[in-house]
Amino acid sequence: MLVATYILGLLASVALVAQGVQGMYDKGSAVKKLHAGNFDRVLDKTSQPTFVKFLAPWCGYCKSLEPEYEKAARRSQGIGKFYAVDCDEDKNRGLCARFNVKGFPTLKVFTEKRTKRGSRRSVDYQGERTAGAMSKFARTLLPSLSKKLSSGDLEAFVAGSDAKLPKAVLFTDLRKASDLWKGIGAQFDRRIQFAHVSSPGKDVLDKLGIGKLPAIVVFPTPQRVDLFQVYKGEAKYTPLAKFIAGTALAKKPAAQTESAHDEL
Image (cartoon, rainbow, N blue to C red; front, side):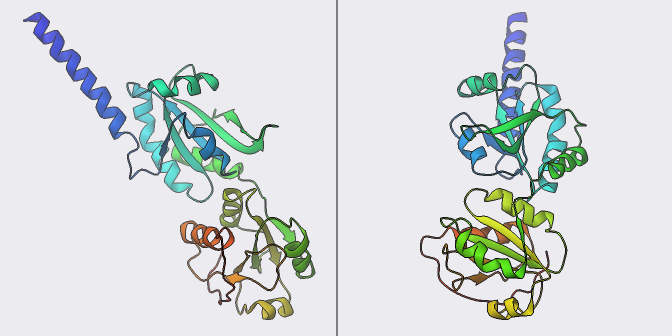
């Protein structure tokens, strides 16, 4: 009888652990799971502040942190990324050892700074483990990769800055670029060059067919100022990122102009 009770208890424990693995950060979660096979590739594609939670499914503290970590991920959309790695999986043990994970959960934050080999540098997150504190920390690390231009600098930037990269430019009546624009710039770092023009001249706006600020213009073909597309859509991260990726990184971008009616 005692043996049977022990076995049932053991099976229940195993079931709970299995349930923890499946239920923690599922497909609908704002937190995405990483593993040793895709870790470097995913992190290298962006320069947004990136939280990584190294966890074990049996860890009570990991489960306790789950709701706040999820909230932080949702609050930080567009300015930061939130991921999780299961260190209990055999394929991830080497990855967790590489980052010197000794206890669970361990939170690492990867910044835009990179090693000589191009890998992103990380710091240990030592702040409060609340959604507000984590999202605020991500915002403080958001890099400003957008170059400030005057109206007269635009042509030189598009034609001669980096001849191999497409360009994306924000025209605004504000003195500084918004966090949304910074987040977009960090997402496409090293693939697209970003800039912003404060209080642009009427002649430039007329050339681009812009009637209202703010406006976003993508120059998909390097060195071609005459080929561009103007964004028309919501001032939200997902549609804007989709537009910029589809326009600037498309194999055969089409020349098109539209009026912009959104605020950043």
